[in-house]
Length: 71
Figure 1: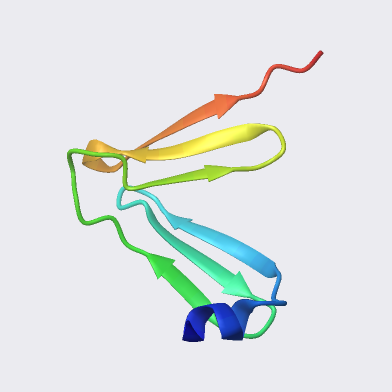
Figure 2: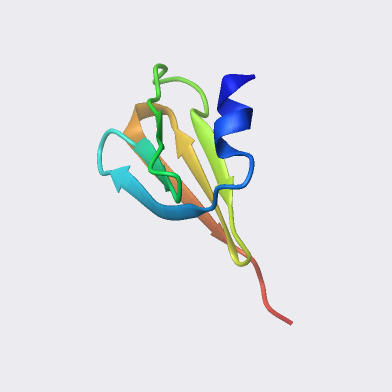
């Protein structure tokens, strides 16, 4: 796929989230931008994980955050 070829060695430099809409924008080191735009108000639109938290875009423009418990 063309997307895989262009982003194969790229790193994510920035992540932007539009409040109330939950549009997600990923900016890569190559200059490419990937926009994830929720098109449903009834289901999870996207799910993002990092080392300590899980972010879930749920119906109605709400963002749910789960923090991992530390030992």
